[in-house]
Image (tube, rainbow, N blue to C red; front, side, top):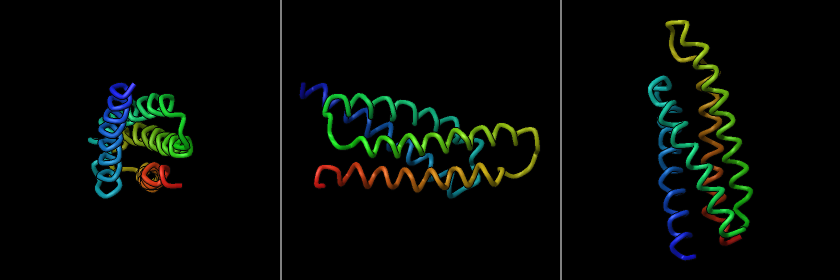
Length: 120
């Protein structure tokens, strides 16, 4: 059980760190077109391994998972808006960047929730 738990935590932390890093980079720059694919590619295993980790521990981290799913939903909406805007050769669409910035706040809230869940 300990090895399984270590693998679940490691996979979740690595993929979630990549997801958060891509999200923060997109929110602060105009690289939404280049980083959205890797961002969503890191989000999927982060959510999957988070579910695996939660199923192993049955802890109070469910709230963090819900907030993370909200962040992923906002990013998916931003991805749809970005794909629609690809037909126009302009700067990244403002609604897509707003979606990324909302996701940044949600991911930050998720990180705070996960870090403090053990102590609450």
